[in-house]
Image (cartoon, rainbow, N blue to C red; front, top):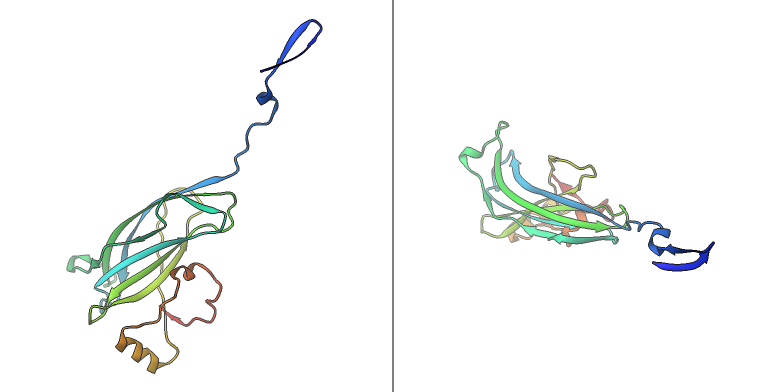
Length: 190
């Protein structure tokens, strides 16, 4: 408190904090808790041992304040008891995700990029597909289903050579699936 000059014989005390406006919040937080549950496929051929890699893509004003922005699941296997009603097979990961962001504006809202990998006949690590999801804007529980896709070569001959060599096309940066730039000319198959 700072005493001010006397007025009418009384001493007035002014508190500089009470005269100023309350501090304004300059940022907000986004907390995500959930899991990548499973993969369902109607073609069980070549989809036996799969694992999932995730990473978050976000704008320049966003910052991770808790948790990790990339992760890798365990290898999931199909089982006889893991068939769903559509005749497809299910691989369960139950891979937990917990992350918190801080930002000053909603531009660049976080998206999660999923990359699904498996093994070919010779045990080589090959891409099975990509998927992307913008994190929900509304609070509460959400269940999301994503369709995966992967890039393909331009000709049948190159596709055969890629299969033979185990070098199927992949994006250089897996976060490319969260952005729109440069994807218009990419050939993909789902």
